[in-house]
Length: 469
Image (cartoon, rainbow, N blue to C red; front, side, top):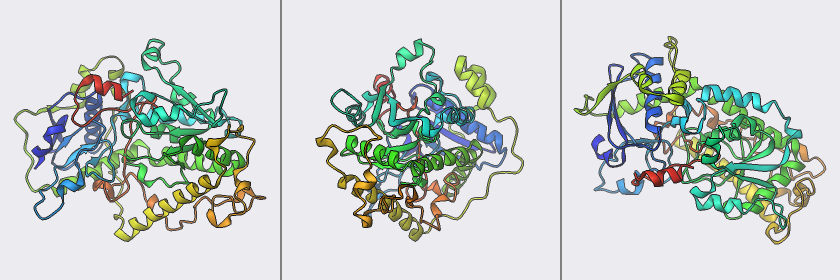
C-alpha cells in the first residue's frame, strides 16, 4: 500500500528504533526535501526513542493528489497514504508542516524560531493606529491567475480600492542582498492581504504575525494549522469574485471600527506567537506520526535503496545559508518532559458546529459587502472617507460585525459569541492525523507573500521554479 504513493513522491522515510532511513525517489524543487528531512531529524533528536517505527511517502509539491472520490464505493481500493504540505476538501493527503519552519535558504527566509522573534519586534516599530490605512500585499503575481486579478486592485490615477500591491522580483532582490524583503519590516500597514498562489502559500504565517488585520481572499487549500482560524476573529474574509470591492469594503470597515480591526489583527498574531511555536510544531509532528504509525498493518523494514541519515551527515554536506539555517534550527538537547498530551478529537457534531459557525461569519461579511454601494461602479474614496458601518445601520439583522449600532462602531462583537470554542483546543495537536476531519492545514509562499510551488506530476524544474515565485 505504501508503494502505491510512489508515483508522485519525492522521498520515502522509514523510522526504525528512532533512526531515520531515506530513499530518494525524485528531485524536489530547491531544498524542500532537504529541510523537510532536516525537520524530521530534529523531531527524532528532540524525542529520542519515542517516535514509533513507521514507513511513509512524502510529496514536496504543492497540489494534493489523493482525490477522495477515487477511493469510494464497494470496489474502491485503500487510499495510498501520502504526506505533503497542504490539502483541500476534495483530497485525502496527510498534511505536514512545510520546510520553511527550518528555513528557506534560496530566498533568505530564516528558520521560524528566529523569524518569529524578529516579527514580534517588528510589530513594535509602528503602532497600528499610525500605520498606513491600506491593505498591503507583496509577492509574485505570475504564479496564478488569482494573483494577477489582485494586481488590478492596486491604486492608480483612476481608482482607489484601498490596496497597495507590490510585485516581488526575486532575481533582482537576490542580487541586492535581500535588503527589501525583510519580513519583519513589512508590518507597516493596518491591513495585509493573504492570497493563495498555485496552491496554499507559505506566506500565511508571516502575514498573520504582523498585528495587521489580515484580509484572506477566499482560499481553496489549507495547511496544518489554518483550519482552526475563525473569520472575523483571526482574519477578515474577502470574496474571490469581487476582490477589489471586497478589499475596499474591508478597509473602510476597519478604518471606521479601528478598535475591532486592531483586535482581529492582535488575536491572529497572538495565535501565531503562542500556538505556532516550534515546541507545539514538534508536538504536532510527533502526534501525527504516532497516530499514523498506529494505522500500519505491517512491520516497517529498511528499503533496499534507503540510506541512514542523521543531523550531522546532512549539516556536514550543506554549505552557505543551508548550513547556517541547519545550525540555527538544530535541536540542542532532548526534551525529557516529552510532548504535550493529545486532546480528544472533535466529535462529528462538534466539527459540524465549528464549520457552521465559520460559514455563518463569512456569510455575514458577504451580506454586508453586497449591501454596500456598488464599489465597482464608482471610483472609490480614500479609506478614511467612508463609514460602511453607518451605511448598514438600518439592517441590524444582517450582522453582528459592529453595524448594529452606528453610533457605537467600536462595540461590535465580531462573532466571538462562540463560547465553547472547541476549535481553539490547539491547532497543533493533531486529532489532525486525519487531515480531512480535524483542524489542520498548511503553508507556502515566501517573501512569503509571493511563493508557491509546483504541480503534482510536473517535475519539470522550470515549471516548479515559476510557480514557486
